[in-house]
Length: 456
Image (cartoon, rainbow, N blue to C red; front, top):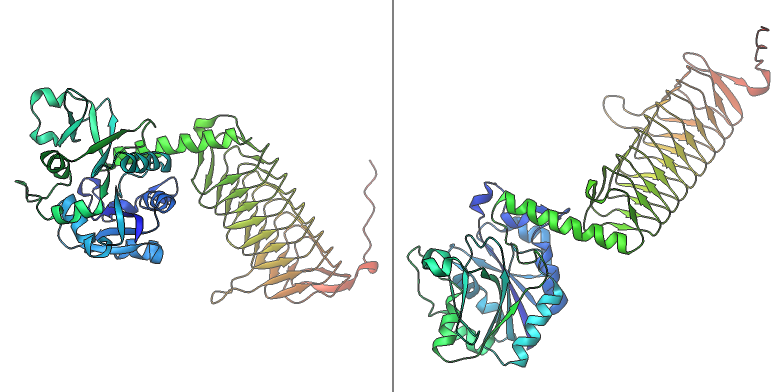
């Protein structure tokens, strides 16, 4: 038996979200809402059970076997949802931690404090409360003259005096397992047909059992999400936490509020992030980089000392000392080698660029393998699609591709070869060979004479 088992309630349909997607799958800072309470539960307990609705396939697909699943076939309230987890939880844990899947900002620190207080006071139930400025829609906490919790009253059932109270129930509970399970089935059905978990507080008081309460001290961590407005508020709070964390770890954000950083992003020390920059998904930025302004980097890695200006990276791997932009697009499965320069208005897709290669401007490099110290002239295009399939272009070390060259893939340009400006290369070019014309013809490099510049 574990000392603690976590049960996360995530069966609600989220009707007020007005969405076809389950509420707990809406993203916050780049990750699905449900991932946050699942991770917090894993930090403080040994087993997690997630209660989903009858259409929870998408949630199962997301989380896989990281949690156990219980199903609430009918939406009959929070107490009923917890009962649905009983067959998987009863006898597995001495104490039960209950979380809501739509309260994503709860911290492990607060949960640990609750759990320690619950054990120290030998309580049968411990609740998390919060003082809020606008308690609309939330259950109010009722205390006696000694400050002991007496009950949690839903807003619809509160009198005028209680409506004014600012202390609310945050929907996070600790229960003693042996006390919880036999009594859970006795929770009455309310007028709306639901069984409320908050009634367990009143029941414990009626039995004279110990009830504890822990007040949240972290701003915003108890926000529950039922509307798009609350979703936006939670995102705002979490983004600010992420920005503050980045700056405390040695990252410079010149205008913090204009920078958007997802939860899965890491940034190295002494990197400067300029305004209007988005670092999304599982992006890793190295030390001493300059990122932005006006850049979007998603699910990409960027090495030390890179400068990425007004450009977009998606699923790319960038080595050290690379400069990109402005106005370039590095797409999925692209590997950019050490010291590469990619100038303005260039696009790279599913390609590998060797160390020191230069793609100056106005070029498309797709499905290509470029060696080191290759020069790509302005307007070069790897013509990778023939209307049926994609084909690869290979350019070996030290090749020089003249401006406006069209490389008709599949094609291989050898080491040290040159293509003349405006050439259409539709066959392989051997090493140390010049290809010129439309279609390109091959010549020895030494036989080409460049006319002298006219005298002025």
